[in-house]
Image (cartoon, rainbow, N blue to C red):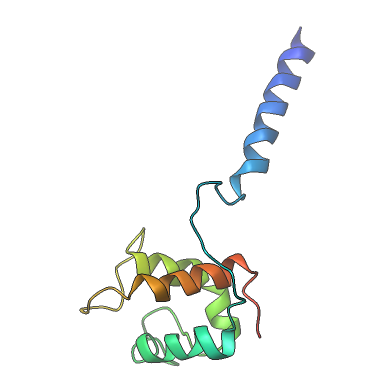
Length: 114
């Protein structure tokens, strides 16, 4: 009986662990085209973020290259949405949904350095 209970708990835990990182079925991303870091993401970050988030800024995030942006992608997206992070750009209106969706698609496509 103990083994059956342990196996049930183990299977239940594995079920949640395996579904945790999956994209929800109802996610309405329309990622038809490949989002390019060099022409879509980096210029958008440079226009909207690096004024405050560049080298030596003291803000905690340096967003000047692929390595920095991709390693902080969840925070970048969370800030753009105002979801779990302060809404960015600071003091300005939220970015258009189309730009936020590009970041979402880039992340969904693997945060490629293309």
